[in-house]
Image (cartoon, rainbow, N blue to C red; front, top):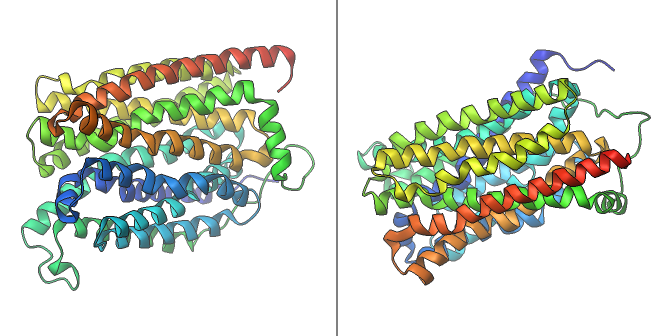
Length: 432
């Protein structure tokens, strides 16, 4: 069976790239408007931490594995379109929320919709490109999500500035809303455009190595993953613990700059946004190049070496509170985006290489489950709790980031190293 043409394959990747951007922008806007939301809804840092983590992560984690199973069984294009539609409408609903409970419910639905993205996207890419050419499309897809953090900052800063200047004064519905609500509504509306773009695409046929087999049952998948737990458990837990650092820091670093370095939201958007996009673009390109190079040379274990080293390079970004100025703090904060993007690209490509083709959607869904339960849910809340309960000073949020994130990346690197040792033993035994 011939592979899809380049135009068709890269066209689908471009839409997945845009979907990844929309997904992260929709969840990350809250990080830029922490204090306006707090004041508008009358809540504290701990409740903001719940909105950043648990509210988004509860359905995202619980539905990750079911979405992976669905991606292995039904049209991934339709599954993805439904997810984008749901999370976009829920993001618009976030901008209309009148209480903590309403915003919590909207964030739940954002998480539910976004749970469809990862399993569908990675599985589609695996059927659009041969194995030795998947590194770059995976890295481009990852780049969209990595760039989105910076795009969210720049987008939010621009919307807030425009709203303050009266740009939406004559728009129906938006004219009477405060700027932070307008930012949510505009972000949600952009996702609906991606849904329209998906209508013009065709889903590639599924490919198998060997004879075509039925989709694996849940029990069959569970048995395979459990049989290979010595390799997979350190990979999944190492990745998730690294993202305690990534999510915890990303959720509160804009607020750290505003509270600790006394810069405005507009300045954070105008300066940190582009810096984040620059480093976020570099990371996936490096990760994709490393993946393809290791594949072409047959150096499977080099991926595990990269995973064991990369998280340690994120330590400086967790210590941005020590920077001598706001400018240096922004550069240091942004540098972490490149590191986490490399780790994510290499992690996803490694799973696609060692997991049976029929279980690819499930393998990616498991990363979403673990990353959400540990990373997205715990990271922002841990930083908020350290700020409120341990340090007792909102202006000390930078130190809270350091206390939570620095140990997490070191522990994640150690777990990746354990996974590499287990993989070597497995390869020697010929068991995988």
